[in-house]
Image 1 (cartoon, rainbow, N blue to C red):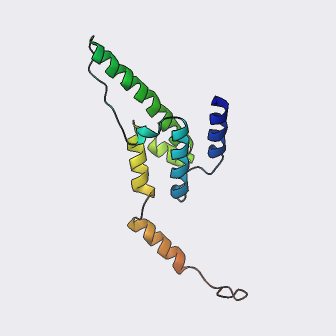
Image 2: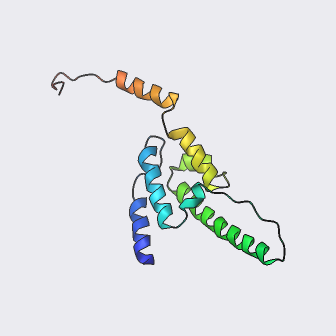
Image 3: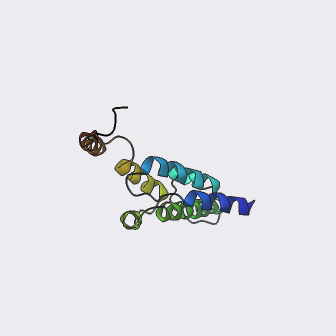
Length: 135
């Protein structure tokens, strides 16, 4: 089973790294990888270090936090390793996968004014070649 998971992750990692223009497909692939690694929930949940104590509840809280911390580390490394180097350097200081994910979505996801403007400029520069029909 572990071998199958590693093969799936390796296949998904063969694709393009995030370069700023391929966010839509990239973020889907990252979600598949994180789901396979059982770390997807770190994109929607964060935790803070619980107060130390000797009670059974304190020990359970610390175990839950340590599990989340490990999954957060897996998610951060997965996201960062699937970015172009220049982007990786820009986002490596985010402490949680969730914060990084939100920042990436704000920058590259959705329909921003900048993205719409870039698409409009690209469209406006298209020219019909003489040897091609409008079809």
